[in-house]
Length: 251
Image 1 (tube, helix red, strand yellow):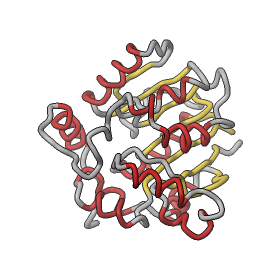
Image 2: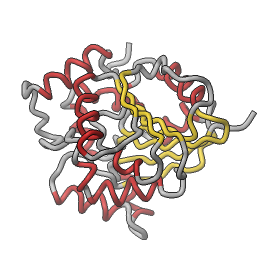
Image 3: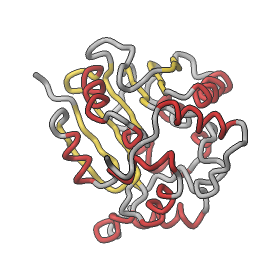
């Protein structure tokens, strides 16, 4: 039995419900960690997420935002394509995502509740799949990966951003938050490579400076610094995120 493992789906739903009701206070991650409008005005997101997807998502592509949470990445995706499906297991977070879509007129985005172990889509349905801070929440990792493989077209892109537990501050934050314990069993490039490579061709795996939380300015500045050449060569292991770009191979 592993010491650290992801919470169950019901525990996750309860966590985000209590968070929305103000019964939980994610002190380490910052009060705006799950604010859907953070995607509208976050310089970190614009620099480290928009640049990552710029050449990988084309107009007209059908995209799955797997584990969309409150929807903070939907406005960035919407700049590239209007055919977006956003799924999550948390009704509380999906309500925020729906509110964001309505407020900003993101017509065409479909928001729905779904489990990564059994996605409600046909085979080869999507041109690209985006998953930000999602994989370490999978209880049955291999089953979820097979579903991701199934719904993406051959040659389709995977854009994955996962926390990097080699960053000591981030690892400490995850240790203090039961909802993030799944990262402590993963969180290293070598482990993600080993898990993903049987199903997907990994094109690159590199440090990424995306900060969703904590919101302290000095954390954002350090993340930008350690992932900017030439410093990324020696300091990239301290990056808050790992950016994994992969594709589903052709038969």
